Picture 1 (cartoon, rainbow, N blue to C red):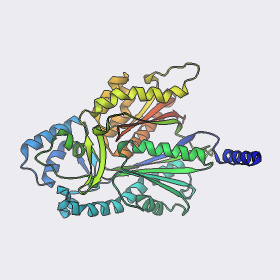
Picture 2: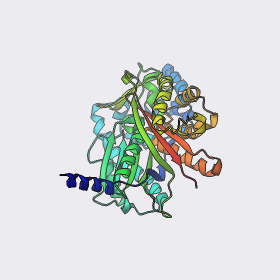
Picture 3: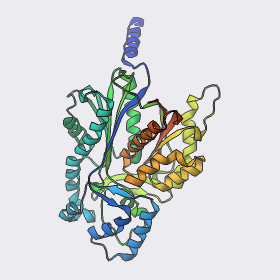
Picture 4: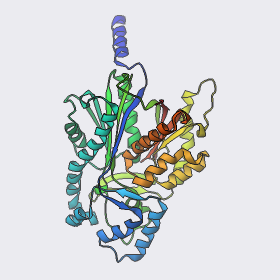
Length: 394
C-alpha cells in the first residue's frame, strides 16, 4: 500500500511543471466595421427606426458622452440589421438567427486573434495541447471552440474547455484556468481565446428605457483576444511576457442585482447598475490585499503605485473610481484607459487588449518599467478576479 502511494506521488510530481505559468504570446482582433462614439446616437436611433423618440435620444447621447469612448467595432452592419428587422425588437423568433450569425463569425474573429498570438509565441499551432474559449455571445455546443480548433489546424486530441455567459470577468477567469492547466500538465501549451459579438444583445430603444437599461447599447463592442500560456519556457524559441504568479476570485455578498447576464428569448440581456463603478472601487482594495497577503515575505508591504496594472476597463467611470480609491498615479491605468477609449467594453476579450497594450508600453520603457503588477477583472455576481503578475525583461 505504501509503495503504491509513493508511486502515485512520483507520477504526480512528474506530471507537474517545475516553474510558474507565463503568457508566451498575445494577439487581438476586431471586425472591420466601426462607428465613432459621437456619431453613435444618430446611427443607433436611425438603424432602429426610433428617431421620433427625441427625448430618449437626448438621454442616450448624454450616456454615450459619460462612458468616455471614441469608437467601437461591430460585426453587425446597417445592412445586416436591415436584413433582420426582428433583431431591433428582441423578437423571440430572431434568437436562432442571432446565434447562427455568431456561430459563423465568432470562430473566424477568434482565429484572427489566435493566429497573431501563436505567431508571437513562435511555435506551430500543432504544439497547442489545451484550448480554453470564453464567450458570452453563444449558447450552443459544439461551438466556437470546435470552429476555432478547425480553422487553426489544432490536433484532434487538444483538450477543449468552454466558458459561456461569464461576462466581463471571463477573460481573467480563462487565464486563471490556463495557469492551472499549464502548471499541472508538464509541457502543456494552452491557447486562451476570448471572443465577443454584440449581435446577440443588440436591440432598439424603448420609450420606457432609462440610463441603466441603455448602458449596454452605449458601452459594448466586438473583439477577440488570445493568449498562449505555458510553464517552463523553452529558450530561445519562447519568450515569457508575464509570469502568472498567483490567482484568486472573490464574490461580494449581496451584490447580485448590480451586474448579471442571462440568455432569453430576445437574446443576451442583463442588469448593469449605474452605481456599479463606485461599488466596484469601494470593494476592490480588500480583494487586492487578500490576493497579495500570501505573497508577503518578511512582512514586506506592497504599495499600489509600485505596481503595474492590467485592469478590465468596464467603463471610464470604473477606472476613475479605482484611481481615487487606490490613490493611483495617472499613468497607472493608462493602458486600460486607452483600450476602453479605442474599443469600448468587449467583455471577456477586453483584458487581453489591455495586456497587449501594457506589454507594448513596457517594451518602450525598458528598464524603467514596473516589475510586479496586478490583473483585475469584474463580472456578474458581483465577482472580482485578481492575478499577481511578474513582468519579464525584453
